[in-house]
Structures are given as C-alpha cells and as structure tokens.
Length: 250
Image (tube, rainbow, N blue to C red; front, side, top):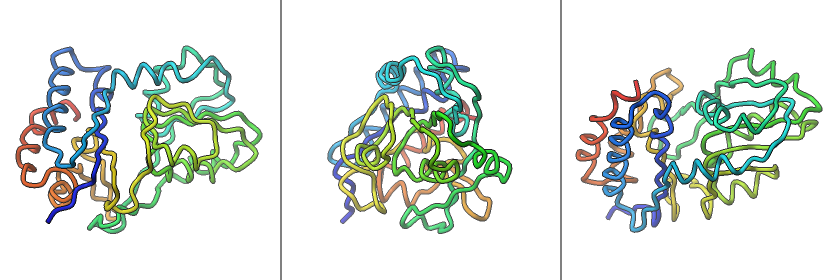
C-alpha cells in the first residue's frame, strides 16, 4: 500500500515566477491550476501556501539596513531582492548561479551535489569582513546555503532573506534569517518522513532536476516520483492541468 507523507506543504511560487511579465488573465490561470493540482495531492493533510500572503510577510520581514554584499541565489533570488531593495542600501549586488546536480538518476534519496562556475567561486572567496545578505526563494534542507557559507568564510556577518523556510533548518543555520513564512518541523531525509514541501514551479519548469549527465527536466516528467510521493493514480490528471500553463514558463 502506498504511504504518502502525512502532511504536504504546497507553495504557489509559480505565480511569483511570472507576475512581472504576465497579464491578469494568465496569473488567474496559474492560480486556478495551482488550486486544481493541490486537490490531487494524496497526503491526508495538504497545507497550501498562498504566494500573495507570503509576499506581504516577506516584504515586511526586512527592515531598513545596509549590506556590503548582497548575494542573490539565481534569478529567483534576484527577483526577490528587487521586491525589497527600496528598504536597503548595498555596496554590491550579485546574482550567483548554483545548480543542484543529482548523481543518482533514480532520485531514490534525493541526494544532490552543487555546481558553480570557478569564477563565481573565486569571487566569493574574496569576501571578507563584510556584512552580507543572502537572498533565496525557499530554504528547505539548507544545503545550498551551507555551500555558499563555506565559500565566503567565517569572517563575515551573514544574514539571510527568504520567502519560505523550514523551522528546523532555520534553527540549525545559526544565522539571522528574515522569512515570509516559517513552516513547522523539518525537511525530509529521503521521502519517508511525516511531512514534505513541494514548490509548484518545480513541477512545471524544465530544469528543476539537473543530472550529472547534463540532462534536465521538470519533476512532473518523473512519473515514478510524482505517483509515489504526491499524486498516485491521478498523475495523468495533473499532467493535463500543467500542460495548459507550461507555455507561460518558457
């Protein structure tokens, strides 16, 4: 018998991804698709995370401040920084491209490594004795942050800003964290835990899963994973809903 997580948190970050370029009708279409897909999740308890409410909290989380360095993790981090930059002054703002790379294509344990350009790595190593703000969209296991923190060293005063973070991950970071929403509990170790967090955009966008071979795909293309952990026999219905909005994320 299939054992789904007791509780799933489902975040509509897809709305955030298109809001600067989509019209109202397209945003409404994404909201409807998110609502439909959330109803297909098989876990006994599904907690949907509304982007607009989370955004209000996110924008209010960070007071006026100056940072010597603002490091935005990917385009998502840069977009989030742009929503709060009126409250901040920064000596330098940079976008850092880090990719999660899965060596095991079965994704049995969801273990992944990190990939970053040598140039970016060298730039991070130069940061010393600075006040630093790291901006990421979701902080789940905290592995990406750990990777960045090891690159920039211990002489810097580091704070972090995110839309959604796990409670246990926040407590283990040992750094100041500003967040739009703190989810109770902690992240998975594998996928056999009581709760899980999924972002809607990862089901849609074509590079949510990157393998060491260079191949990339969305999670919705991994039928085995989607059936096992989220949608069961309703997988086909979910792919149909997502197919109607995928063109908005090209």
